[in-house]
Length: 285
Image (tube, rainbow, N blue to C red):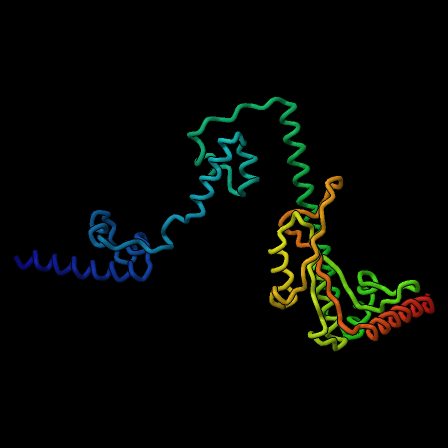
């Protein structure tokens, strides 16, 4: 009787240690080696009702890859194409799809077309990466802009995109229209540099009738930091059925018109700055 009690006490002590180690996040193998328990039945009894730590569970990412590999195999892809698509090893792919039928061998002409398309897709990816790297490198060379640099950039921007006075049409108004949010933000930064009060600015959306007008109004209002009701009445441009528009899709939001009230004096300064820039480059040419 005493011997049985001792064995029971030893088991309970060992189980307490095993449970403690399990809750600390150790795996079955680590617990086995730590407690020198090499009998699987005994180890199972010691860890009964204790769930394994999360890190020992098979990751879901593998399951997702497996399902995707099977989908691609059923579409007729080879191991090589699946490997390129998913970035996993051929041995894993073989294990995951070995129960599926092999894809039918394609005619040589079709194989050549697929090979050409694959090479072209690779070339496009390389070009996109080069394009991205060039843009990133160019952006880093700009650094911070001084007030003078922003002044000159804003003048050039306005002279390219803003309304201008003509001898036959003396308006001297400061109106600016553009569809690029980055251009709009730079222009507003330039107006802040010139100490133009926000109360002097008015905003109006110009957009084709076939677009999502309400979404465009919310987009531009959020960009410039005003409530939608503060926008002036949107100008709807009628679509000419004889023309094929390319500015379509979810990214099309029309243009934003920004007007500076009582802008005659500011316009004269802009025209003067521009004339000075043209003269300066002529003298240094």
